Length: 501
Image 1: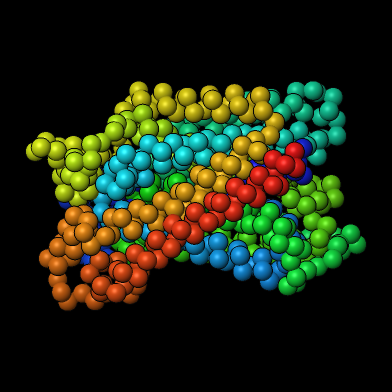
Image 2 (image 1 turned 90 degrees about the vertical axis):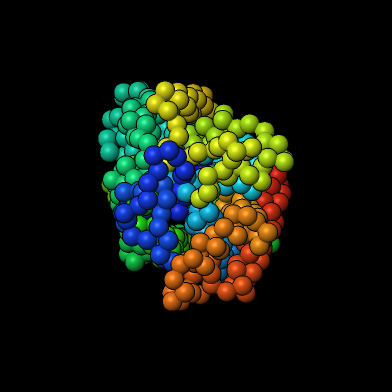
């Protein structure tokens, strides 16, 4: 999901498997290769998993897509939207592959760090926590900025009651709605609010499309660029908006932990459906919004329509969207903060045996780590959640824009969890020398040899050495690509955000 800046300019647990004393074998369907699941079996349906992941992906930043297209041209812009979706989807796919090495219900960035880069785990989780916290705060700021205009749009006399046009009043009021939702433990519990948020997105998409069909904006339309970008500088300035529009990887492990049927086919289908729908919506809004205003389009296409009930409802839809997206940021933020607080340095000589994987890990014969589907105690859960909510509320009440901060947080945090970490984790854990990979291969060998492989993206690891080698190389390429994107976005933000201010 892109940063708040684009809107502000115009608006004034899948395959993870925990090992615990009470772990039992699942009675649910086996995985794509027929392996029995060990650990806690989730209850979420495939549909609810897609809904929550799609709501995490698509946010108010969809309204900035027409501006990105105006700078890149329609042809290049559509290609980059599709490319960004492909690379983000591959990162999600690698997460589903990595989760196979963990006991069911235990998949997380922290758990993978423990068996790949144990002493760097705290850095990864800190980056995720900061990124999710910053995005959550930006949602509250959007609510405070948009609600006074929504009220005025519905009632011209609202200005007579000062509190109705006070951003702090609306931030406080909407906090009463998001607080109970933020205390829900399971991501699946947010599926109904995610449906409401997606309905809001649907309204915004229909609004943009309807104005395009009606043609009521053509009088003020600027020049249309089909294949000619504005400039290399303009392309670079919009590139981060599109790349970060697909960021949802912070919630992928929770979805994998909670989905009832975690077969390879089902989890891959969740990724394809979510990324595919998001890409379709981005392209539809980008093209119709851009053709409506041409190069005169702004960062928030809805804000450019003439004042009317429909455009006011559109602004209210943005508020509803970000309100129900806030708990989706609190969920991974809480898990990462908990992991940071629990982290302890691990000696190198012991790290090889430390694993929350399918085998019970041990150090000198003693269990080292026994992750469960939910390892946060009641008191700790309440304290961390309360801390996140209170801090985000204080920041939103005292700061009117996080554009500069989010520019850097997005450049580092989003690229890390979308590209760098999935690529590095899979490259390391799937190494032929990795004991975790060798154990997984042995389990595959113990299964029926009558089952056929499923291609490059097959569910089993016993799918041919060349396929495994190619997937490892692609994962390393994704991590390198993430590093390039990070550097590009940091340079872009330095030149176009900080210098501009």
